Image (cartoon, rainbow, N blue to C red; front, side, top):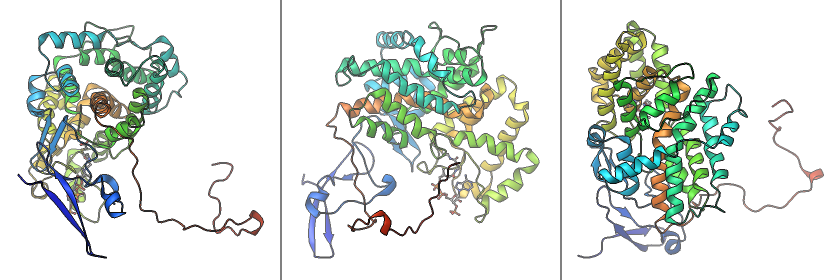
Length: 443
Ligand code: CMC
């Protein structure tokens, strides 16, 4: 079969340039432009990476048009229904689902590294009591790098990589739960190694020294499914951040702290928070139609939070699964009678049957249900992105590991420079400033 190539014509001079086309196992082909600058003397301009495949990966595949999400070839719906978070972590990291022996070994490793060094605990008291828990998470995850330094751990070796993987996965729920407890002023609750990942996480979040929290099956299931459904999502902003940081050979704990920072933004991990904020604004079922009208009005910036998706254009496969567990949770703890959740289910029902939303294919996305689940579990909105970070840690570290095992070069994008050309230096007494300095002493 002849080699597939892409030919680009430079209309300024008629020069032709040929580039190889690479075929993946699924999804669009890619034009290999690694030699673009060398051949043409030009850079490729793609802000926001809308047309850029930044790497080759075997971990996750998304087909947004068809609403498909595969991890290592398995459909997310099947993984969520038939496996648990441990198995999905193992799968993302190793490429296959574990057999019984390997699953037991994996669980054993994770459960025996759940505690934090006592010295790390003291870091928490350095944060303001009213800090956003994501601010605490950026600091604490980054601080782990001082407990796992390069002089002791060779993170380029297989053994070193697994130290980073196992410690991060085991300790991230502990760090997250402590960030929550700190915000409440309650004592930290130590992990319990006889509990499953999700059950232990709920225990550390909600138990107190005065009373043990016994989560319902629906709560454990809902959290476990939520963790599975947020475990990885291809080369998104936070994953790319972890990989760009890691491409320089930086400590993996510091790289994951960079991922936590990237996730924090409202355009990424913060959407489920805005679902609850929106429900609070709508306030009552009677107001739904008024807000639907606003959402449909192109001159009104109001949008239904938790509806629509940039990549999934037919449906969000994660939302379909989470919807079921969300409804189970609301049923079991009789939350359907709590006004906020009653309002959410009514809004879901009305929007799903509304012509505008049907025509534009705007259906509830994963954040609609994760926001409601986390609220029903009793967490404040400020913790929602933290829970997302716990779930996504496995995606970050799997993609980091894959990158370090491939032909990795430091990520170093170029730019279209639009600033001043070379100009002469002017001595301070000869300068006339055009700008007032914005900052003053009080800012
Ligand atoms: N409510 C009302 N109208 C909407 C909404 C919405 N939530 N989403 C899109 N539309 C309309 C939009 O006004 C536009 O109408 P028109 O064709 O008349 O201009 C049309 O649908 C297409 O919208 P778009 O903005 O071009 O679509 P997009 O792909 O750029 O936006 C989105 C995707 C997720 C930013 C958007 O749907 C949105 O703002 N949704 C609400 C916020 C939200 O739930 N975000 C979480 C997404 S899931 C995140 C994750 O996977 O981690």
